[in-house]
Amino acid sequence: MESHWAGIITGIGEDLERPGLKDTPKRAAKAFEFLTRGYHQNVEDVVNDALFPSDSNEMVVVQNIEMYSMCEHHMLPFIGKCHVAYIPTGKVIGLSKIARLVDMYARRLQIQESLTMQVAETILDVTEAAGVGVIVEAQHMCMMMRGVEKQNSMMKTSAMLGSFRSDQKTRDEFLSLLQLHQ
Picture 1 (cartoon, rainbow, N blue to C red):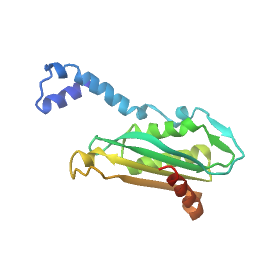
Picture 2: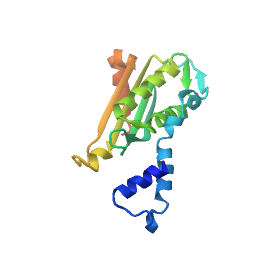
Picture 3: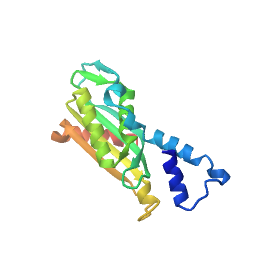
Picture 4: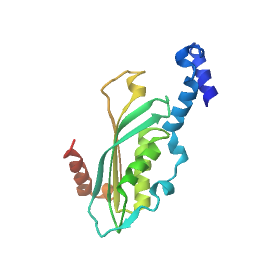
């Protein structure tokens, strides 16, 4: 990856011998490896058996999970928040595991629509919940730094599965809980 970054830098007309750029290909490769570390993770390792028996069948909401991802179309960041809710049916997942699952998918080349659905489907599959709701709000550098250059644009996506899709009251409860602490 380091040699590819060197090629990109020289390709834009820069001099790799310039003091500020001497180690940039190595640093850029290391940074890109970190930014895409989700490719080296899997659901089983992230969850790590952190599923616990529970009699609760009330909605669990984790709000404002910071996330950083890379647009697969322009390889520029998109940055935002993910809100996850589920209704347990006999087991709950460790709180930090929800954030780790968001990170695992976000740290891949992505489009926001797919990221939202991947998180929802994984939470549903792992917890066997009655329903899952996921909302992602993000600002996309590919739209802010280039192209139409719209600085205040925010993209919102949602995935509603199970009871979150079939029951309007469940969906409304999720949405009202998110508004409590905006």
